[in-house]
Length: 444
Image (tube, rainbow, N blue to C red; front, top):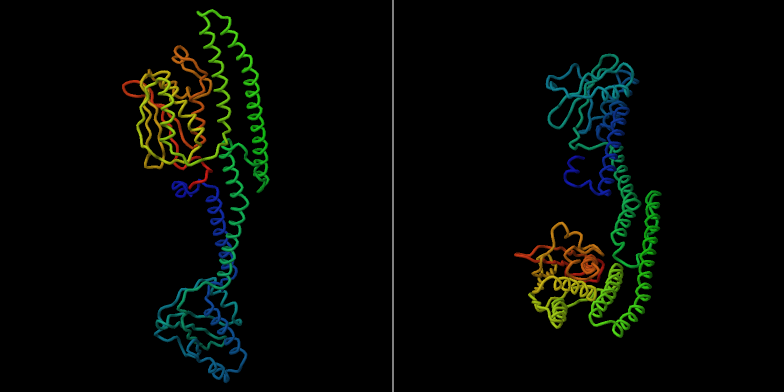
């Protein structure tokens, strides 16, 4: 078991069940065979040897019942090559090498013989035969010459038991894998999918009671979380709807009545509030994105986004192939890349967007800026929703949702978003996604 553990073969429950059942079956089979051979040692004999032992016992019982004058007539009927019998005055000199017969087997053989008959020994008689020397009750010696069984075969009951245990273990393994492992595998797969799909069907309750209870609890948890997400979405949608109208009226009144010195600052605040609401709604939408996966020319999509920022007066350079087909959710990915570029132009003056493909069939999109960068201590926090670094609070506006939305989009594509320092200064946001798109998508 330690070797299996070291090799990592017992990490899966299916492997553990197989190992335990096989070991338990082998132990039970060995125990039963040992008991049978102890209680009935004749099972150690091959079928031929068992037949010879029965024949010898029958001959000896017959010799004890017939008169001494008729014994030779009886023995003359047993003169085959496989087994023959003859009276001898003494043990032949050629029979010098005795065979080791287990005491329990010898006791069983003697128990089959008439009372008073003794087995004097079992000897090798050439390479193909053995000799059994027996003394009758009157002291007369009988030599039985038997052909050796050339094959080492288990007795039929032992073979039958082995077949029975093999079939039992196979049936138990099939039941265990179907009853235990399959529901657990479906449970784990459903837990992995949860959160990545908007409408995950309830998991079927099957298997042992413990697994059914865990499945039932998972289904209830899934329903509660889905209700919470729907309530959160409806709440933010309602808030955004209710705030847009008064914000629009407020903007109009500012434009009509405010002094020029403070008008622009107030309009900027109103615009920031609108942007914050839109960012929060976008984050909620991306959290339950259901956009279909499409085969998209990713370089064209990236260059279109770069052109939009260039039209706004920013310096952006694209470095990558001119065509590369990728399975992705184009609208979600466009929003993520736009957020990364928007975050870069807020802090840097020159932006470089790189696109490349790795040998592992992954697409890497890097957005580099020449700004102040982000300290290592804050890199893991700036991707959280609503978090803004001190530098961002002092220099630019925003709601702290851009990177959080990009992380969510990367997760939907089974990818990652990581932040790295750029030499000599600046930040590199690296978005990595597989060429074949999100898990569960149709792959052409």
